[in-house]
Length: 340
Ligand SMILES: Cc1ncc(C[n+]2csc(CCOP(=O)(O)OP(=O)(O)O)c2C)c(N)n1
Ligand SMILES: [Mg+2]
Image 1 (cartoon, helix red, strand yellow):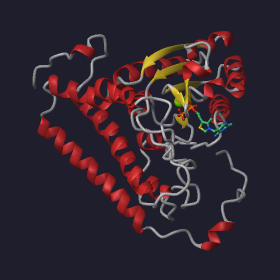
Image 2 (cartoon, rainbow, N blue to C red):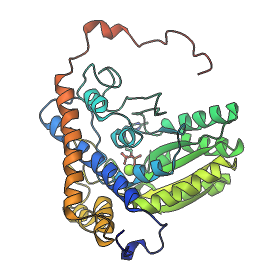
Image 3 (tube, rainbow, N blue to C red):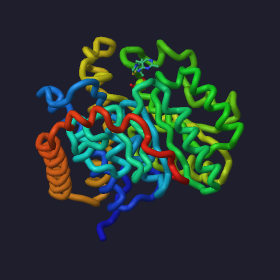
Image 4 (spheres, rainbow, N blue to C red):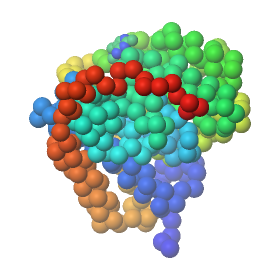
């Protein structure tokens, strides 16, 4: 086995194997390439409606999914494609949903912001800012009620963190010791509003203190740091100690949505994050500097990912549009769930 040199950035990080690093590299790259393809299809008019890309934030969801176990749940906002891919949903089904086709997760009737997978315990995809936070507490309540030790990840943005329903949820979650991890994906902006303009206190996680909730800030451009913080939060929740807040500092490279003119920040600011803090490049360097992978190994992974993404785009173009009769289905539940 190759000798392992520790890269400068990883000195205080947990031990990690070459296979693990490659897995994170692959998973983050899948999200990035998938999102780039979605951006292209949007430009070609194949995706309609809103489309919010996750490019730049990949390490957040990949790090936290690495800390999750089977049966754990997740719920997020409209910036949701990365979360779906990271929890193992099929890229074909996600892309086909983006293009409004029958083969999509919501049979082409939901689009970018409305996809679900019972199998992967992915509960959306929510377009109303902050709405997923009380839903996340509800999911955690169901696990507590059933007496299992599953944990729910409720993801939301820095903008959503200012919502009243988030404060109410914090209170109830701590009061009932709910096993929910509140993940604030602080990407520095809520549409065109920077956190400095919207939040008096720069430490969003500290608001949990008012409710007795423990939390911490995490470097969201470092997948290993995210994973380590995720493991700590998961252990806290599984032990029945109640909720936990992770404020993950990250950055979105693209506009808020595909129609964002991005006049609220400079190109240099974005460029600097891409060049100096990119999460995928960080893992790439750990792999290369640690002699865990050669440039050729990484090229092979790039190729493999490109194929998966191209296949998903092909599938989404070939899948038919939903039949007209589908307008009248999936409106009401057919039957009440039986011990679901
Ligand atoms: C209740 C509500 N208010 C306003 C909007 C319009 N809106 C959509 S996204 C957004 C910004 C949210 O920013 P943030 O929570 O930081 O998440 P990010 O987009 O950065 O992931 C706003 C104001 C909305 N969808 N729902
Ligand atoms: Mg934000």
